[in-house]
Length: 148
Image: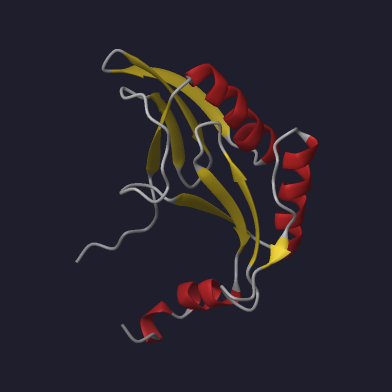
């Protein structure tokens, strides 16, 4: 059996590529340190943000409708940083850059050490940044001994 070792890329359709690019340039490049490039696929311009782990690609939408997180499809995307202090840093940096992010807050109903900040892209896609929680660390480090 093959083992999945990560997410390679995620494609997001956007209603206004220039507006979304300005938003994601701030989020991914300025705040989170991603790199970017552009390419054309099927005649459509694309913008890719990437780090060592995965790519996040913007492509123009072909249907004009508002994002509805409770319809089938993407509800939200959560990115992981190493520590609670990193979540605080990201929240502060987003707000300083003019992106309305919630304060880094403990969400004990999710997990006893679950800290997160939430914000929304120009099309209404909800984004989250959370810390690398102990349960996730244990899952990674003790995978072979866990029940399945």
